[in-house]
Image (cartoon, rainbow, N blue to C red):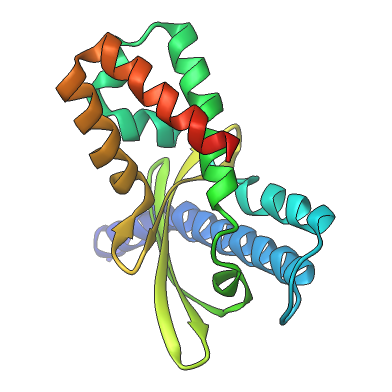
Length: 194
């Protein structure tokens, strides 16, 4: 009898950490959403001081280095450490600046779906409802320093990292690594300065 129940017991014991991690991720996303909604309110413009606070909350759990590495793909390996550091800094400025482009998304009602945990990575599925329009907002996450960080945001099937990767890698392929990197950095610096 024990030999029949032992696999079931082992499966439950192995699944328990994944359930706990999925719950941890959902709690983190819910807390972030509540903090965002407290800043944006239900309507109207947001004062500049609150915009910066909102930008910090929205981007506070994003791993910009992971996103930058994914966006550059194999070209990341060709960069010197100083180039990588500079790229992550400027890339994060661009993403942070663009993160407040659509405040309606932050005012939307969010429902939380499944969270799939696989080792040190996870996918969290949510739906944002604004009026009678639903948008799927899914998060790719990774375990880092004892917590979870967002490594990609996919809105209605469109990956944030994937969009950047298409553009960035095209520049790098056309120009070559060194010239492409300089051209890409010039373009990103201009976008960050706007």
